[in-house]
Amino acid sequence: MGLAPRLAAAGETVTVFAAASLKTALDAAARAWSGTTGNRARIAYAASSALARQIEHGAPADVYLSANTRWMDYLAAKGLIAPASRGDLFGNRLVLVAPKASPVALPLSAATGLAGSELADALGGGRLAVANTLAVPAGLYAKQALTALGLWRQVQPHLAEAQHVRAALALVARGEAPLGIVYATDARAEPSVRIVATFPAESHEPIVYPAALVQPADKPEAAAFLAFLGSDSGARYFIDQGFVRLLR
Image (cartoon, rainbow, N blue to C red):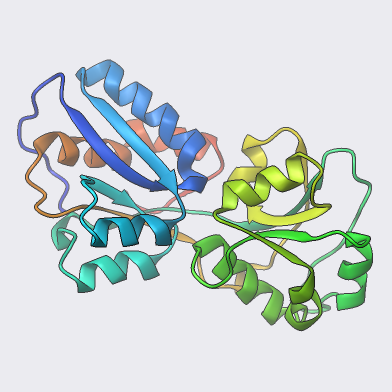
């Protein structure tokens, strides 16, 4: 990933569009970067799909961080990112969560699977909180995992689909949904939930967070911020939150 920045001036603002699941770690990294450079990262969090559409329609972003390769590829195909700046920064895991006090226990195994009725029983008439399964990365991964484990058809009528993964997490944290599917890092960031089970890695596509500069990619501060995220100094904030570092 060609992230070597030109000289950047202090006191500048970089506009970052980032997947909602990155918020806890990226906020911490942005504060650290601002403290050492005097520049500011202004970050908009939402579903990767929504952010990509906004960039497509001219939203003024300098940096884009997606929760899957699909939406980065979408922008790349339209010539809206700088190809040399693109790199896969982090990985994640997909987990099933419940409110902290919930006693539910549900093993998930690619070998043994889980009866759809067991998951439906655990919901107790409630809903399974997920991100939108048609477009949002966390929802796409959730659908893949549920399908691979033979659970999709039984569970689909019981879904509560949210705009992004942090919204799905909030439904569980508030007790409005008895179970939810989120990233492991989301569960770590929310003390009101606990991880019930981790989905087998082979049940869904690898969870990858690519990042790139948005065209015209002419702001040296944006390149500097992206370089910081890929550095040892920046990556540690994500590792502390449970992300897996991919770029070295």
